[in-house]
Length: 345
Image 1 (spheres, rainbow, N blue to C red):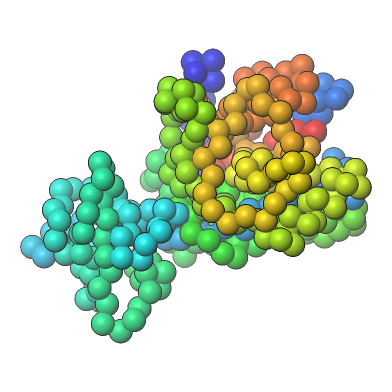
Image 2 (cartoon, one colour; image 1 turned 90 degrees about the vertical axis):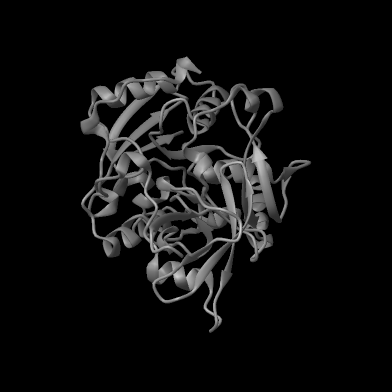
């Protein structure tokens, strides 16, 4: 994994999103000609093949970080792992201090979590409320947008963060991190895509904290990665299959979209699916669905870097991810969640 380690100057970690969103820089790498072009994301349609199909992750980031009170009055940080909820009576959370089974953690409005279980560092809580309020409502009222550790300290108000750390087409799901490659899209970009007859389709992958986690040897031994919940509708599956049959390219926006698409291919066709995926994509890997990839610049030694590198190898690229990242750093591209974008053709 050390070959995926790199040093990044702190000034290249952008703490806030640029405005307008599509003014972010775009690093275009054409694997067929081994050429690199610098542009802005507003012009991304210029580089995509006419009539290709752009697939986006429409997941919604929930304000999953809460500050509650113990029965003793002490403050406690509770991070709701919204993307992992399978049972409404056993909500998985992370806490910043010691709790015990049976303990109650109170919202300012009187509702409370009861601690009902523990598995390693994850606790399970049950929500108690007298007036039928949902967890999503309580998060909306009392929660804070969960930001990656490298963005902590950014002086951005919560109301602004909720809008900016969310795609403009977010619709469903329960993520604790944004599908960051999609943060650059604006209505202007979608209009330019339409002018090239580039259609769009949407799927859902609920992004978890595993997206930031360093890789462990266990993942290579099992061939499996952290589990995330995905939904691919019949409509989306049909549109992807039709595009493939007609020889139109599939553009995956983000590693989450690429991961989902490669999880639902069977006998050469994309299948409708709602369930879990733990697919681990790393070199060498033969992509069956994705033809082009839009992605951000990722944390060192993470699964996201390996997926992108696997795609470069699959495309027969003369340069690999570390080569491209070195060029991006030299040319002052911004990295990570609010950073700039890369298009691999």
